[in-house]
Amino acid sequence: MSQIASQMASKILVVDDEEDIREILQFNLKKEGYIVEAAKSGREALAVAETFLPDLIILDIMMPEMDGVEVCKNLRQNEKFSDTIIAFLTARNEDYTQVAALDTGGDDFISKPIKPMVLISRIKALLRRSASPDESENKHISVIHNLTIDREQHVVMKEGVKIDLAKKEFQLLNLMISKPGKVFTRDEIFRKIWGNDVIVGNRTIDVHIRKIREKVGEEIIKTVKGIGYKFDF
Image 1 (cartoon, helix red, strand yellow):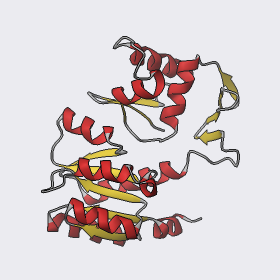
Image 2 (image 1 turned 135 degrees about the vertical axis):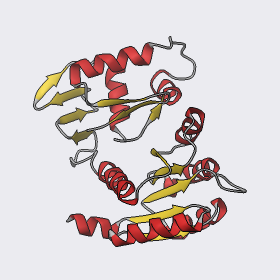
Image 3 (image 1 turned 45 degrees about the vertical axis):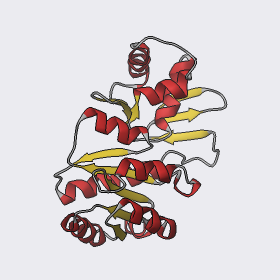
Image 4 (image 1 turned 90 degrees about the vertical axis):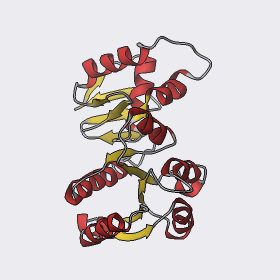
């Protein structure tokens, strides 16, 4: 599928209570060939999403009645939107706001103000990464960039060379590779890799990330200060 055809097939829902922001984003997204709908409140966003079924949602956090975090939580409880990309857009950039936004299932966090073409670039990257993890017909195998992950055999290959990872290192890499570009909070990583009933030290994640970087490549996993980590390429 060509890039233009891919963009035409991508549907984006813009949610913001400020009319000028909605109009600017709609104009620039439509100019890029995306199919765009907009909502001015959280409740309206939920209603529009039900019928529009967007591939990606640009979601403002600070809105009256129902904020973006609550909207995201509601969406993630609906199977229709389990794989929908949600990018938060907000003027607030405190760590606790970002953690709350991402911990409810958000995929990215974009701070206002942002130039339209920079936002377009971020959206293209999110859509591209969302489509890329499973290039193989074998669903237990993922090919991303120069890495091949075989979940059944617990094998990681980089440019055809096998890399030996410990069990938790493999699980952690597999988790992050499942959603390239998504920021996984430290709490989310603990829950999914070690479980709520297992007590580990605060530095456990950092040690495992360091070992993965040493074996797979320093550039593969990015640190998002004060929040967590993400797989990038």
